[in-house]
Image (cartoon, rainbow, N blue to C red; front, side, top):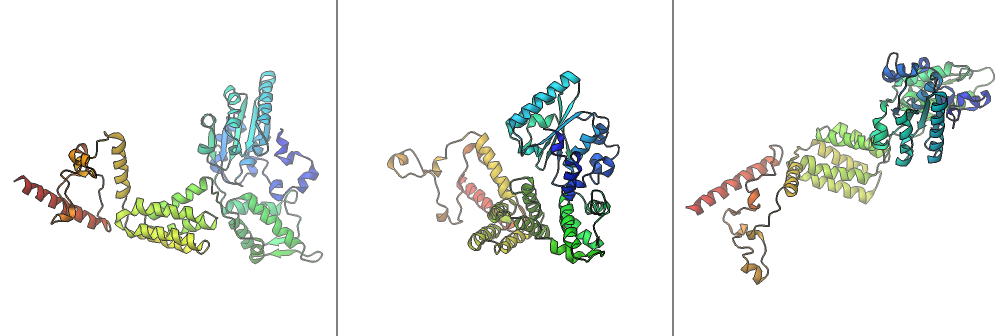
Length: 454
């Protein structure tokens, strides 16, 4: 599969003219490349390696429209190596093996390296990715993989360890504006021949809508110009203002993938914003998730978890609020349930915080796994049968309600763990009252033991 299948600029002029604007305007050189200067700016290691034809295997990771395929196209133009490109969406294990065999023959017969560009490499399964490994290790191919997903999760560890990862960030609005202005001025590949003038604030609206994706921006520009070009009469130029652009913009499709990394990034941002008592950030990240189509019950489950993990007994009402929000969403559905979730998120963000419940359980679980699993002390066991009573089940148990103070001076942990404390309440919120109670009960037990020992 040759590189022309992914790079239509190598095909006939007629087909190029019919290609979408985003395809026609792809940069052909580093000088035309806008953005990503931290990665491919003059003097940067990746650019130097490409220009010297010394490229080693790399993974290009970034959201759509940030230049991954464009950078591969520049590599194809600059390098003297044999270049093959194919898409993980369209290719299978057989195509991979054919390409690997061709690369091996090329290296042995001509001494020429093969650069293999794999678009959407995360769509290949483990077996398909493993097929590249022998040829990468032998030096027959240089792998250039492009992915929108975190390579740590989506690329095999063996392949990842032999590749350098370069992160391509979403383009800034200034970068997008440059790309739009270049497309409007270019009479050969762009829209310079169209009888349309676009106001600056209209371009800014397009750049903002694109959300860092150059392809989205160019597609919207092309459709806007096409819609405006047919309106004026002969020899007249159409003028596009911001309201006209906004009519072309449907409801914004938010950057989100419920099965991908952005899912985890956003829920992490929500959780950490609530933990840091920032209700504004909390409700913003909540809205980002819900407006992008996240399962509201998933969000509710995370709020319930947060109520115990990060608020706990500093505000015992927090758990009740979170569970009530879950029930409200289940009862009335969406979008009406969004305010219940927002109420819970803001309540949790503004509640006093304590992770004492979380740490208590972690320490108790550690003790359960690591220490000897001692039998339950006899005085804590029930004795429903005569045999059990004869074996001293329940002997020495003191019923707290019968004690004048409401507590009994008996140990409830196994002998090896006596005196061990797992729960350490903070001085925040209601846990301050819990600390007072625990200290009081401990003082009562100590006094009762001393009196019994006299």
